[in-house]
Amino acid sequence: MARWTILAAFGLVMLASASAQAQQFIYPAHGQSPAMQQQDQYQCSQWAIQQTGFNPNTLPPVAQNNVLPPIGLFGLFRRHRYEEEQQQNAAQQTAYANGRASYTRAMDVCMTGRGYTVD
Image 1: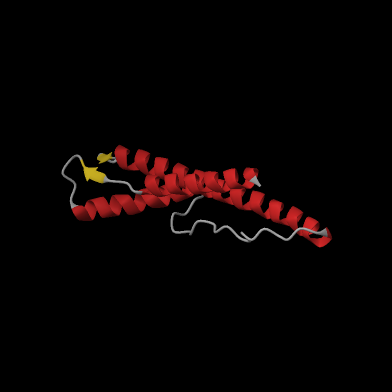
Image 2: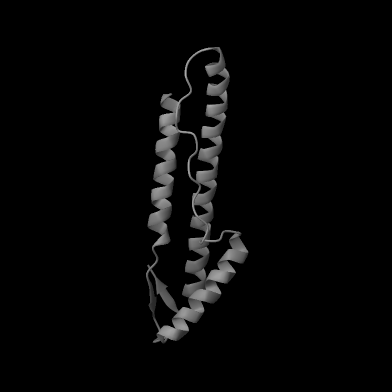
């Protein structure tokens, strides 16, 4: 059970770090207008989606079945399925966090290349 607590905590940390990385501050370094910045952000977003395969508009995966099955013969089989589901949930959350991080890096590169300061 401690193993699943660690996996759940890891998943939460990954989601928290993904949320923190999602917040980008983009400043025009060469006097670009707000309209130009908006156009550049849209084009860079489309490019980043194409490069990474990650769409930032998708919602993060939600952990399913957080109730530990009862102990007993049938509980043993259900507990095995519960553990498999927890592993799948952790894998989905990790994949989402990695995808978001890749997307953010791609956006940073694109916007920097277009003359913006990204922080």
